[in-house]
Length: 294
Length: 294
Image (tube, rainbow over all chains, first blue to last red; front, top):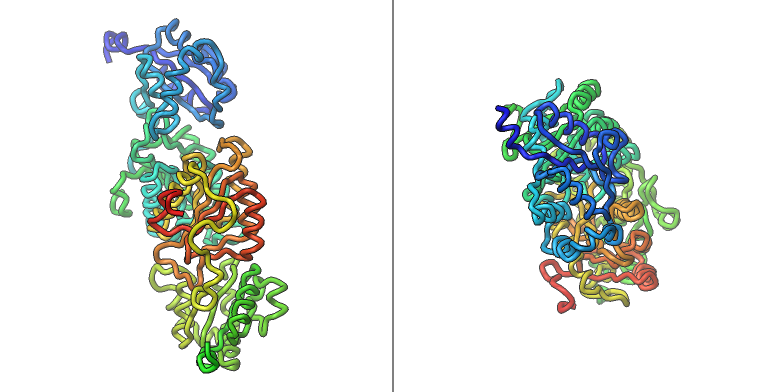
């Protein structure tokens, strides 16, 4: 990329929730020579993120946020990292900038059947910002297609993989969940509001109390995007903790959507998976028929 | 019913798992003047059931079970009550009768994609028994259509009811789960191997930690049968504990399939629901459009 191209690229505001991902994206942006600012979400961003943040902003400080974006000349926005709690309505009634935009905010948050995050995107776009995703600025962080670690799925694993994949597709049609677990030819867990980690913990508990009977290293977690999921803000993610919990649940491996999911802390995640004897695989939708594909 | 009709009706073997339902069915059979024997499943049947049982049989004692059925002249079998643990393969290798039938049992349990219970039915049918369900012998225990308690669903409740109903239908297409919970226009929990009680507990916990935000008395549990579910052995059931857990989860009410679900301990269940301000409603599939129906 030439210097002129770089100069033409807008400065990015990285608005950071929890987890280590915001720092990894910041590293990727650094490596790519991109110009950016880190804005930590108060009560969510990790200590490491806060240390390199240029600003810290609470839920109610939308006026301050837009002021900061304008002052620093950021024209692009990247929302990254987790948000563990949905902000309630009273906590967003913070500063004057928030109050001034309240009609727009209410219109955005109330309208249509879109997810909260889609509505948040629209809020930024209404103010003239371009909302970008990891795919746009750091595609190397996404899962590629095929076996990602050293362990390969066995034949039985393919059956469980396909069962769980079909379940996530059905759930996706209803805009519910991203993940499912199949063990020994049976879908045993489906993700709702609890999230993937809690679903894996449940699966471990169900095995412990005998409600799921299976040999060790049996079963597959599949995590995909919903059909209309906006991958700019809501990217299915697996990381080291996913591996720990999948191991605790006695699973054989994990499948994520190639180019549509993030393997956070890739090196640590995959070496943990190798050590635990778990496969990690990137699958293409409609192309997960079996070992022959890979 | 004339004496001749009664005499023509076969003696029923009530094979009883856990819960209070087996005793209620026994009461219903008594009231109907039916002749029956109660066989308690060891390690599952409640104390009350065991007190009125004519025999107690463990998982491995299939030979003894068939011997008892033959000796007592039972030609019909009713499997009733819960089984908290799936028997493992070694525990069914019990007596000589089991060993003798092992080829049949293995063929039945291994063949096809049917559920374990469907396979168990086939085992009885292969031996010439007729497997009956609650619908055949005590239809008055099933949920009827319409509002069952004193509380009626509000308009928002109908939206959640329909969302959760669509989710259970999608899950049913994959032969997964029977239940889903929608809260405030969003499906938040789907039932896998954990069962309805555990799903309700999870919902309460997600509200407690703020992952689900909702006013009190918001959200609906829907429990339906899967399209191919054999209602002779696997009837969606709600009871007093369901009400307790739905109340703890802050829900507005519960919907079950009319004529396809059981309201166990009906009086206690409905009076608990009334006291908690929860509605309980029997819905007809494809006919749950809104308040106008009821």
